[in-house]
Image (tube, rainbow, N blue to C red; front, side):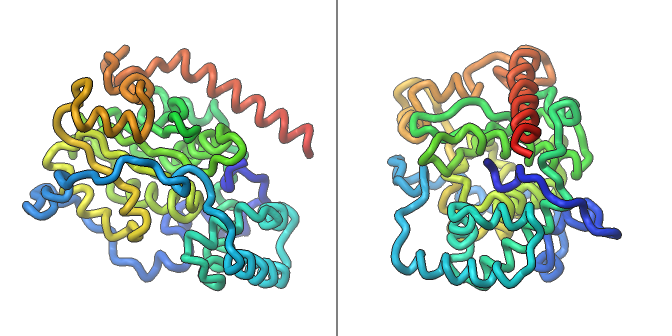
Length: 332
C-alpha cells in the first residue's frame, strides 16, 4: 500500500487542508512563493540541453537498496523514538512497516531525528488529506483530460505516472493535490513485490505559461512527491520541453533536493526511431515507450492529452477504487 493511502483519524479542530498546502513546520522558513521566470537566462536554457547522461537503470532506481548494518541501527533508533510518541492506532500501523520507515530515513540521508520529524509531519498530513476518502467519483472532473494518469509499467516493473499540463482543466490547488495523491496511491498499488520506485513522465511538448499550473500548485506537487511519497521516484523524465520551460524549471529548482535533481532527465530534439533520444528512452522505459506514454498517439478529443481515452481508462480506475474500498471494509 502507498504511504498516503492509509486510514487515519479525522483532523484536529481548527486544522484545514489550506493550512497544509505548505506541508508542516519547515514550510514557514521557506522563501515566499516565486513567480514564473518567462525570460529564462541562457544558463537556464542550457540546463535543458545538457547530455542526459547514463541511460542504464541502477537497481536503486527500481527497488530499495540493500539494508546495511548502519541502516539497521538507524532503523532501530527511529523505532525507539516512535515508541515514545504515543501514536494512535492508524499511525502506529503505518510505522510498523520497516519499508516505510526506511524510505523516510533514506529521504533524510539516514539522519534519524530528521526522518522522525518528517514522518510525524506526514502522519499529521494524512489526518488532513485522508487519502483513503478520495474517491474516483470525486476525482473524475480533475481526470477527464488525462492531465495526470498512471499509464503502464516499464520494463523494470515501475509504474509510469504521465503528466501533461497542456490540458490543465481546473485551478483549485486543493483538488489538484488530491488528484495527484489519488494517482500516486494507485501507482504504488501497482508495484509488485520488490518494486519501490515509479517513473514520472512529464509531457512538455505543448508547454505554455497560459496553461501551466500555478506556482503554488507546482511547488505543492513537488512537496507531495518528496515529503509524502519519499523515495518513490526512480526517474523524472521531462519530454521535449520548449526553451521557455527553462524559466519554469529554474523557478521550482530550489525546492528540489540534490538527490531528486539527479533523477530528473531532460530529452529534447528528435525522437524518431533509432535516434539517440529514442534509444535512451527505450533503455530507461521500454521499447514501446512512445505508445505507453501517449506521445506518438493522436488526441482523441481536442482538450485531452495525446492517447488518452477517458471512458476506457476511467472504467479501470473506478474498478480499482471499488476494489480497494471493498478490501478496506473486509480488513476493518
